[in-house]
Length: 375
Image (cartoon, rainbow, N blue to C red; front, side, top):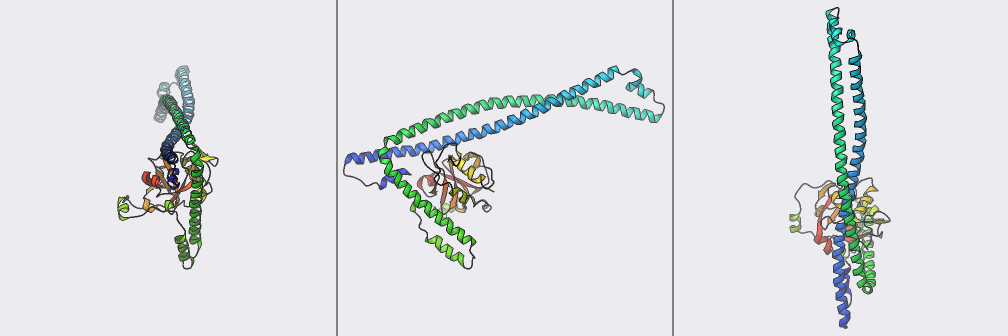
C-alpha cells in the first residue's frame, strides 16, 4: 500500500512539512478505501454483464425454439385441415362405416376395424400435436417477454454501476491531484519495492522448477536449500502457521491436488500490464478479467466475475494452498492467483498494474475470504 510508504519518509523540523505529510497520509488512506469500494463496484458491473450474456443466450435459444414451434404448428394445422377435407369429401362407399359394413369376411372386418382405429389414432395424435405446439408457442413468447423485461432492468443496473464507477474514478483523480507533489517519491519507492518482490518470486519459482526436474537423490536437497536461501521481503513473507490458525480452518476432506500450477508461468508474463476496469486482455485487466484470461490460456473457461469464479472448483484451506489456486478478498470484491511462497499475482485496482503481493500484507490478510481450486 502506498500509505505504508509514508512511514519511511523522514520527518523534518518544519511543522508545515509534517502537517503536509499527515494530510498526504490521510488522503492516501481515503484513496485506499476508495480503491476497495471501486473494485467491488467493478465486480458488480461484471456480474451484470455475465447476467446480461445469459439473458441474451436464453433469448436466442427461445427465439429459435419459437420459430420451430410456429412452423410445426402450421404443419399440424395443415394436416388437420387436410384430414377434414378428406372426411367430408369422401363418398359413402369409402367411409369408415361403409368399409366395415361392406366387409366380405371376418378377416376383412378385423382388418377394417384395425384400419379405422389407426385413422382415429392418427387424428387424435395430430390434434394433440396442434395443442402441444400451441402451448410451446405461448411458453416461448412468454419467456421472451420476461427476458426482455429482465434485460431492460439489468441494462439499467449496469448503466447505474458504470456511473458509480466513473464517479469514484473522478473522486480518486481529485484526491490524487491534491497530493501530487508527494506521489513522485512514493511511486518511485513502490516501484523499487515491487521490483524486489517480483525478482524474489521469479527466483523462487525458477528454483522450484529446477527441483522438480532434477533427480531426487541428488539435486532435490540442494534445490530445497536454494529455495531456503532465497531472500524474502518481510511484506511478502508467507502467512505464519500456528495451531490456532490450523484449528480455525475447515475440517472437511482435503481438496484434490492442483492440476493448473502451470498458470503461474502464464500469469507472470503479464506483470506490469495496467489495470483497466472491465478489461480481460493484455491491453488491460481487472482482477477477474485477469484470472479469466490466464486460465483461458490453458484451456479452462472461467466467468468474468469474482462471485461466479468463487463458485468454480472446490474450496481449499489456506494451509493447503497450491500454485494456481484462486484467492479471494474483500467480500469477493477482489481475487488473484496464488503462486506459492505466500504470494499471489493479481490486477489490484485503478492506477496500478498486474503485480505480485503477499498473502500476509495487512490489507489482504485482514480481508481474506478463502480460496478455490480449479479442477
